[in-house]
Image (tube, rainbow, N blue to C red; front, side):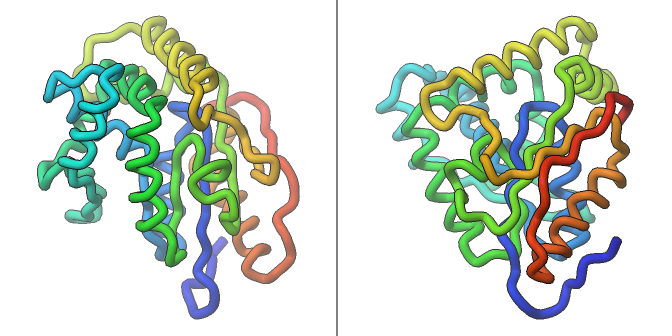
Length: 245
């Protein structure tokens, strides 16, 4: 399905969901299809976690975290069709994707000073519309009035398998069981954190990607967006059986 890139309102589209559900891939492709800007909020939290790790700042040291945030410049850039995450001008796209940084990110992202810092930055980036944002609280906290909200999910086993294949392709030495366990632990941390815990917005459309190809997920999303642009409303949850993605 082709969504018009012409004139008219440019939407704010929120895609939330747990780690490993395919949000980054889907969000990037959807933004490309719409001609929108892709804002990877999860990468922003990962970047703060990396900065804290490098600086030796404890997640429990709120004043130090606040100073660290004020010293960080986080931005996105596209080079040869690839989206890069920049920390003070340095490409950290690969450095923020390790299992160690993933777990630290869950702890860092629960800290109010970090959430407040990135919340303002995310709202500045997306306020004009024409954006697709991904994260865990985009539709509930960052843009509760987003034009279209999706909640992309998959089983912990499926998400662990995907992350395992991704890490192995990068040369990481880790077992499938370890990867699945890390996904389950990350879910627990995200769901139980005090500030902006992971949950589906009541008006978000849920898509279980376990049994869908990337193209099938995109087709379902673009159908909803096309309907919204035509003023037809958004429908209800979309659930599919377990499979591969």
